[in-house]
Length: 282
Ligand SMILES: NC(=O)c1ccc[n+]([C@@H]2O[C@H](COP(=O)([O-])OP(=O)(O)OC[C@H]3O[C@@H](n4cnc5c(N)ncnc54)[C@H](OP(=O)(O)O)[C@@H]3O)[C@@H](O)[C@H]2O)c1
Picture (cartoon, rainbow, N blue to C red):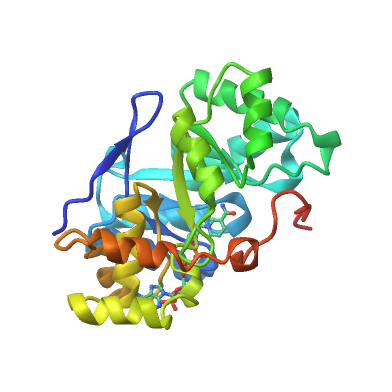
């Protein structure tokens, strides 16, 4: 079994650099997928209230038979629930749906700067309470831009432990990553293979052929060597295994640079722009 490196967060806690994402896994398929992922060796699961499968994530972890303390579990606050009272109730529901008395990491899913009078600061202070009472071992944010992080730094006492943002070879998101590096915020790269869109790229397929690995392995290894945390999603057991086998090879510096040069800037973004995203699930 591969040995997944751990990254030390700014509060001293550690996080496995490779995990398993469950976005767009149907609730009825989630428990089996999580159990299978744990069987493969994953010890880090990334879910969210918005994904509608927290209950089944908990079921899958329990069905695997591993101890709760041996798996790192992340969830995220849903967009309609940023008001402090709503956030407290939602966090309680997250824990009760998962069936655990703590999460390893809890994130604000989106900053929503055009909603709630732009006040994600009081939401962040509410998460500080979850950290203080021990129900969230670490707290962080997702899809925060530099100006949002600057505002948290100016108005609150806690630097987020992570910022989970879109990053892949077509959208390398360098400025936000660099801000994280400079301020002790670990970057988690979501949609690390751009939901498959980068896997046919001729640069990536050429490098993969040269080193005898698959395109997905090359792209995921590129993230690992850049120091980001990744959690590719797959409901296909053979792909879960493929995506886990990243620690018996290295990408040379020249190939790393070629992959990074595939960046298309804002044009490469596949998800919403955090500055304008304002979707509240009904
Ligand atoms: N914070 C946020 O706003 C946010 C947004 C998006 C995602 N995320 C997180 O990031 C995780 C990963 O991102 P994602 O799910 O959007 O996309 P992804 O992991 O980049 O790609 C998943 C897609 O690629 C396919 N795939 C997986 N491994 C493959 C392989 N080895 N070869 C070929 N195809 C493969 C999967 O198909 P099959 O499943 O059919 O095998 C699925 O369609 C999510 O699950 C979620 O935890 C967070």
